[in-house]
Image (cartoon, rainbow, N blue to C red; front, side, top):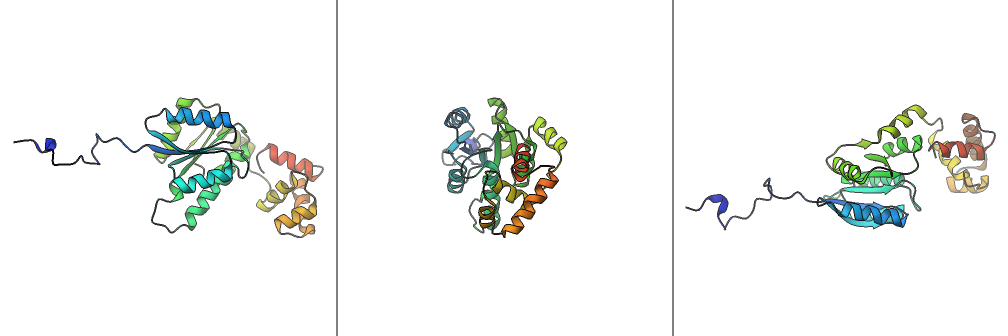
Length: 233
């Protein structure tokens, strides 16, 4: 009698330990062509990783993530359109508002790669739902291992970046003060900031004055520089 496991009429059990696990589906977003193509080439060499799309901006990243529903999104921190933290926040907001029975964006784990190791960025990233945060100096083998860890439901933050964030302390700015100061960072006049923030010019001046006072800055421009250098805006 032919053993059951060898019977040609029985299909392979999809849950069998011998069946290969589905590849980890990846979307890569970085505005630097060299970095983007290098990441795609490195990750595509892994048998268990499938790069399904690449993007050159944060706006494009959101579109590709919504289209492909990847397991992991590897995001540059600073990109045009939307930065990596804003992309992660958009994914989180979309997943909360979605009632679809299909694969949700919440299942996409976000990994930030950065060359801007400012403490405030890490705290903002974690608040936005980012699961991994590492410098671009991370070796390729280590990066692929971190991606696998995120896919398995774990988190990973580079130890040095984590220590720097703890040492730097929290931002003294309120969310509204940070928003207004960020709008002022590029030199926009008060009237334009008021229009974009949907506030009165007087309220904008009050927020800017409060931010400058908290940061011990002589003016709003200096306050914006201080806040930006620490990653608070």
